[in-house]
Image (cartoon, rainbow, N blue to C red):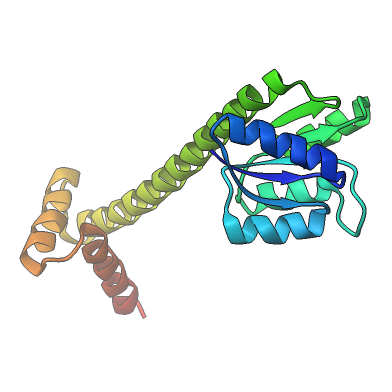
Length: 192
């Protein structure tokens, strides 16, 4: 796993890096503030980030985590010395993939990162499937509109109109959607 470590305390960063290396992880970068973390993550594209909530500077850990998640760079596991309900609620609203309270136990880090990455991967696949389904639906709508035009203008049954679009697609060596768009455009042009 390629991990980025973000904490304003150098000793904690060193300890985390050592633990990660012992678990055969690659530490792609380390930062002590949120702004540096965001820029570093954009450049290195880690598989996950271990990030402290409270850090100095203009961008705290929650703000940096929000940016990384919104830009779909990587999942974030937050680290904090605070076990406050508000922080947990805010981090879950942002979409943080894990939460560890300091002092962090070594045996919690690796499993938490594995789960965060697995959840992230699952969400990315769902988003991709959603886009693909939306595209298929749009394509289907266009062909259906063209079928309707053929059915109305040439008194065809639905199956016959579909076959006509299919045949034109093969003859013209065009995608069925392109043929359907041409049918729709020719109908719109004829009605002008």
